[in-house]
Length: 500
Image 1 (tube, rainbow, N blue to C red):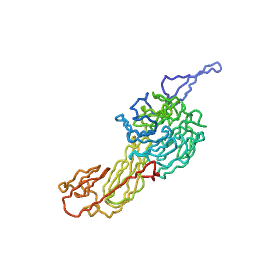
Image 2: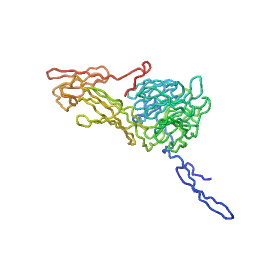
Image 3: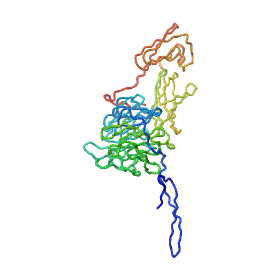
Image 4: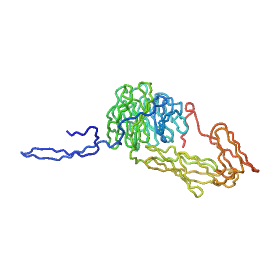
């Protein structure tokens, strides 16, 4: 028997075995190479470290966005800032029933959720609001949620009155705002988890069969390109209501028995255990996620409806990511001169997160560059503009998409300028005076506008009260531009159409 030093992990090595054979009264020696191969999954830390606890003890779902972690529980939305190590409650509203069931997936600034009752919605980080979307076609309990590209998937669960775990898989089309049924899993599961990695969807663990048996070690993966499932290596331990995290190269099970999966070699290995109290059922119902080189375990329950606030993290370095992000510049836009044109790239996505959005186009002979997922621009010259969106991730992988902006001339021309021209850098502060506005308003200095007599008063919120004194005589034209953001009550109004 060949023994390895304790704690050493085989990678890819060759072992030479010396065998001795006795044939016809003669001894012969044979050199027999034996190949052995083990996980080359990303290295991880040796122990979980405790970070500051949630403000409110809850179970729920966690997703990373722009360097922070958003945790959506049953009654609140809490945000973790790694630079300060602090949590804060940003919304006293949550997902309601059984936040440790169901799952979530993030696309752009939207965290899509299907809760324990198979009720679907999304939380918009930018607006700090919840919005309903259609529920999956097959209503069931204890499902799992995952994402590949811009498609949200929900799988498994069980139907009330029938405890048998289902194999159903449905895909949500964000653009069409509809669910469609795709190829079913090979094993029925409830209380399992799903995660998308490198274009594939992984379903791991859960309760199979009639729903009252033990937890399963089976796992399988789904390829959206072929609409087929295939089994992968079984886990070392059975899991239920566990969390998952990925660095783009490996999958980490966040549970009472943590495990690491090498997606390249289809191999599971043990991972450090979390030093936290369990509930006696062999699982924690903790939310798992990944951010900036760490896997996180957040919240959970120690017994039915007995929540805890603990949070932990484990070193989980980023992989050598080679997967390009998906750039989505939204639908073509029709607008008018002098109007604010809003670009929308929030549906762009990446397996580990987009770091930079850059928009570029030609305008009056010059290249204009804008930054961020949703910048705005005022076109003063009519025409058709091709705007290119370039998105990059932390590894430098990039992708592009285009959107066409059609700008028509408006009836009202910019005040004091009969020809539509881009803003000039003219200043003459002696020609006007301003008074400080009340409410959340801002007066943009005239040198940022068309000419010295063309101020722009921006009303952000609150009661509008602003004064501006013009010391030159003449006919003046006041143009009021109002942009109203779509808002609705998630509980009482129908779902909105897809918004780009």
